[in-house]
Image 1 (cartoon, helix red, strand yellow):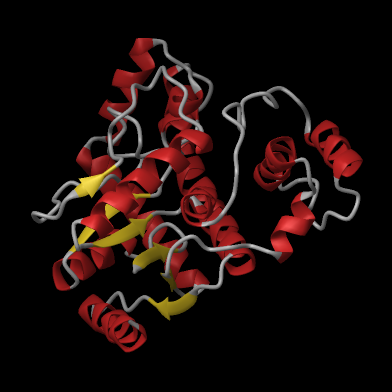
Image 2 (spheres, one colour):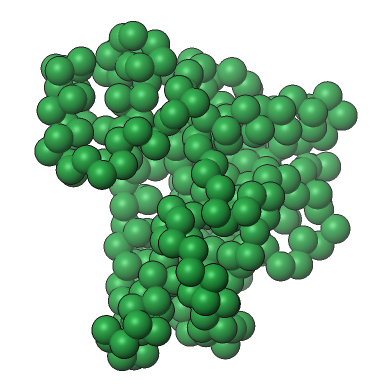
Amino acid sequence: MVIVIAGPTGTGKTELSLFLAKKLNGEIINADSTQIYKGMDIATNKVIDMKGVEHHLLSMIDINKEYSVFDYQKDAREKIDDIIKRGKTPILVGGTGLYIKAALYDYKFSPKANNEYEGLSNDELYKQLLAVDPETTIHLNNRVRVISALNYYEANQKPYSEKEKTDKLLYDTLFIGLTADRDLLYYKINQRVEKMLEQGLEEEAKLLYDTGIRSKAVMTPIGYKELFEYFDGHITFDEAIELIKQRSRHYAKRQYTWFNNQMNLTWFKTNYEDFNATCMEVLNYIKNNL
């Protein structure tokens, strides 16, 4: 049995995964595309205290190297198979939905996945998709899904719209989603940004800024590019922090929409006042469905 813990940023996925790993003899597999990279810890909200739980696919790639969904699919499946073979429970945790689907579904990617479409506008990408999949229901501004659909066609020579109707899971899986009321979640996200500053976000961003590396890995996480604008003198520090908060809130909204539409998650509302109650609710659900 594979357990997935997904949902928007700021809902407590990391804490829940540590709790479940202890209770279910589990090992955690990172499913966040930004936490794969070394040296990017605070902005990506990487787990600091692992509480003795084995973690996989964290801090393994240099920031100047490319790492695609094709690479993640191969690495994640190797970890899942190994953990199961050793009699333990694989727990996939993260907010990158495409990574989760790549690991668990019968979905073939091209080794060039996501790379060959850099520089193309959303309109140009969408025209390419319509040419191979005229029945697509993907919105033209949903760039990630448009690219995924193009990659799927390249690898399988059939439209992604057909695949959506026939998604096949490779593993017996339970999908858990954490969510929260929007206003409360946004408040918690703003609080978390303030905590990241206390932990040294500005200093971490400055170290990356000084390397001169502006790879996709560095420019993707929310937190660095905003502070880079401050270091460049284009905006004030306060403006950079407000941008980080705003973009984090928007990202959480996009994540919830994606997971709600793309995965059959069983949703649990995060109880911030008594998170142990949320943990026990999820644990009981899992035990009743094993």
